[in-house]
Length: 325
Image (tube, rainbow, N blue to C red; front, side):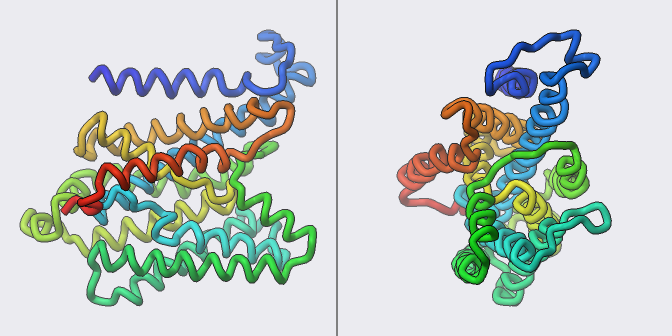
């Protein structure tokens, strides 16, 4: 498929070029290979981990968007519209205020907080929905949870001191700042499990996207599949948000564009959306590094500037039909 090849070339090109973009430096290929000099140190300890973190985080957010849009048959569905990201943000912010920022069992304290917050949102949504596990009902419950945890986040900021408040505000802008591979290694297991489950259930997602009744008639346990994917994806997003902060709209824009370009079959859509989302976030981060150079702009600002008009475009395009079924 020509479009798939172009997509792969774009992602490979972004991954190869992104580490070299930023403050102008004199790169020497020999010094980079052997790790000699300040430039090589910056390249391998800052630039490369940042690009890898961006690709993994973007892939996770894009994969989560594919799952949510398929499970609830809504192009606006994402971890952010369902409140998962708000819950993860509150959990991570509470960890900062309470001082649980160290590492435990190989994970940051804020990572535990983010996962717990995302899991709490998932549990509350299912508790509120009860036996009425429909896409529209769960979406409304998720929106309510998003407002609730956003309020808790503001309350947490109010209780924090000046340093903690500044740290939380800066973190809420979303960024990929890292100085080693530790963040990448912390995030990798959660993303691998979440995306692996997504790819494994591609056929089930195709059936659910056509409607619950048709999916049941094809032998798909809709309730079980929706519950497992929703929970695992929420934990994955919680881990991402706890490390990078909330980076919005990636899970809406890229999966939706991939669906328009490649069709709705998840056997092709899922892996392409995962790869494209990773490349997209890396490209946005590269823009964020150069747009006001030598200062770094948080990548969440770039994605929000792109996502706002895109969100309005979807609303105008689907004015009469926001749900596919």
